[in-house]
Amino acid sequence: MLRYTSSLNGKLGSRLAARGPSSSQRWHGSVSSEAAAAAEPDMPLSQTPVLRSLTRTGTPLRMLILGAPGAGKGTQSARIRQAFDVAAISSGDVLRRNIAEQTAAGRQAAAAVASGRLVSDDVIVELIRSELDRIPGNWLLDGFPRNQAQAQALDAMLAAAGQPLNAVVNLQVPEAAILQRVVERYVHVASGRVYNLTYNPPKVAGRDDVTGEPLEHRPDDNPDAFRCRLAQYHELTEPLLDYYAQRGVLTSFAGDTSDVIFPQFYDFLDRRFV
Image (cartoon, one colour):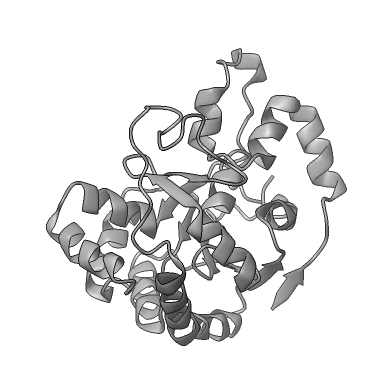
């Protein structure tokens, strides 16, 4: 298993400088990619960042992002997509969309989320399967799988398609730092945009920056529910680190904040893409 603990590296710094202040602000600001893009004026076509889509091996990136609840998986995913042409599937966003649309799966998920429990394997596996079926190129999964049964189901699904995983990234963040994040987190359910009252507050209290619609404080974003989710993570998800390490695809990045972890992540992908 590889482990990166470096600070901002020269490659990332030079690429950010080449892209200009606008791109740098998007990558290193706390706001979600969607909110950041909406907040900026339209750029001329010549200034629009060109996303890197080709890997050095020619095989599309098929990657998982693992980490404790609130470790910043969604934040890393959004920043990655500012530089690389990678489709992202967040199990949390998929679940929230189905909950908001009150689908059959969404109603089952809502009851589990409200009590701090994990959604059943059958529900989440089917939701993820339908998302992956629509993606032909690079992709990453955020928040799935969460246990070995899900991991085995994903492996079987990908093996049948001849598209096995080729990267798994684990985010190591202290639990105290994560707790502070989740209790101050608010979400725009329809888009998945995430705000934090301390480092990324909405422009208008309680309202989404883009649509002006009300934000929601997720039922499981409180200390008691978080501790329950964390206990479930230690029991069910941490064993996946050994599972993927044995397959030679696991890399871990450590840091207290997303700004510390992202340069490590970028350097990892920079080595893989043309």
